[in-house]
Image 1: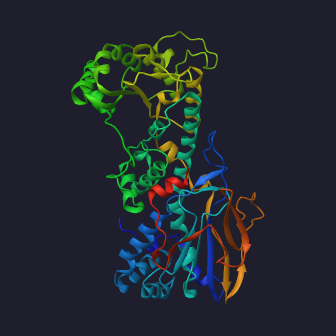
Image 2: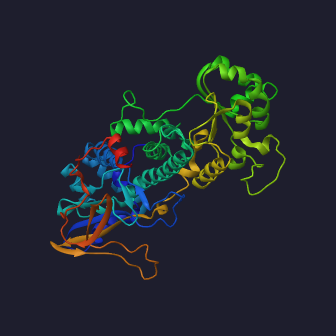
Amino acid sequence: MRFNPLTCIDFYKSDHRKQYPAGTNLVYSNFTPRSDRLAKKGVMYDGKIVFFGLQYFIKSFLIETFNSEFFQKPKEEVVNRYKRRLDNALGKDAVAVDHIEALHDLGYLPLEIRALPEGALVPIKCPVLTIHNTLPEFFWLTNYLESVMSCMLWQPTTSATTARQYRLLLDKYADETGGDKFFVNFQVHDFSFRGMSGIESAALSGAGHAIFFNGSDTVPAIDLLEDYYGADSDKELILCSVPATEHSVMCMGSKESEIETFKRLITKIYPSGIVSIVSDTWDLWKVLDEYAPTLKAEIEARDGKVVFRPDSGNPADIICGTGSPVCGGQSLPFNPSGKGCLNLLWEHFGGTINDKGYKVLNEKVGLIYGDSITLERAEEILRRMRGMGFCSSNIVFGVGSFTYQYNTRDSYGFAMKATYGEVNGIPQAIFKDPITDSGIKKSLQGVVSVLKVDGEYYYADNLTDINHDSEMKTVFKDGELVRNMSFNEIKAQAV
């Protein structure tokens, strides 16, 4: 769909131009994560968000969409399109169009966006960007873009912030149990595409995931990073995956011939390399306790790894077992389900003991779990694995849309608010502070600046000079991208 950028608004934005005081010539706003009260916070959360997605918004919407769907089209066509939409919804001539005509005549967006570098680790309540008009007659344009900016920026930042929590968690357990730190790059695999709210949503979220991990099945994220962040999959690893089955494959092979399906996959279809096989289409425990040892010779003869994928049940119990002494003190029969996946694979394939005294499975077999994984469950699984004497690198987590889509703009309280303006050239520091609110909605006031001290960002507000020194630097001005960041530069910021 080709969106009309002038109607990518909430309806009420269309007439605010008349509502500002006569003589208004400047509107200055900021975009800020105001609260983490509703955020998904794992044990590694440190009160910081990972700012990401602005360059995509600027290139794709402010430049590409505005040029192709507005500035480069005949004025009469775009103005009539705009007028028709508003007339039909708000009433004939309810909103004038002279300001739209003037913008088309100008030929560019008279705006300046200043922002922290993408990938920056920013504390809650600290602004990540400011935006203001550069020509006085287009003061209305600043907050006209609020809805679409918020819509397109909150999710990539939220997903990147969540991915960072997984990364910190896995790094911690790798350090404690002697896990391979390079392998952590592949230990959280993005399975979220099918559950996202749209292709753009999946690509933006998947790109945020890619700041911290290389494992993903969300192909459009690679396209986005190449097209808008200068990545090049011919020269660098952006995201990658492995051959993997789904339940339809196993079902078509039939329940009675499941072991033959496994054998065909690992000896004929994928005789080498990594292959992931969904293993709970019928009886996971039969697969791990009967089929796997029966096929042990074929598995160990392969130049590669066979990864077993459970896909249902309580993840911690499926992986770690229910008969483990670290499982709530339960004393259950040590049948296959009581042993859990890790113990069964260790029993049948063995492995090594690393320098820190933790078990590392035979390199010919692996385990991935891709259903119902959350930050809390991942931490529980890693904790229980450590208690059982297993290194953290024995598991890969498939993380889906419950992690990356089951969030909102309110997860980190993102809001774009005007805090400064000018009327007839006279500065005005403005703010909101609802008496009925808990304090979360209280906005900053006046011009805001962000400074960096000892590697940490701090903000100051109630300033009066929009050119005040700040870590927020000009990224977009008068229709042009001023600062272009590469994806590698963003990843370096996020360390």
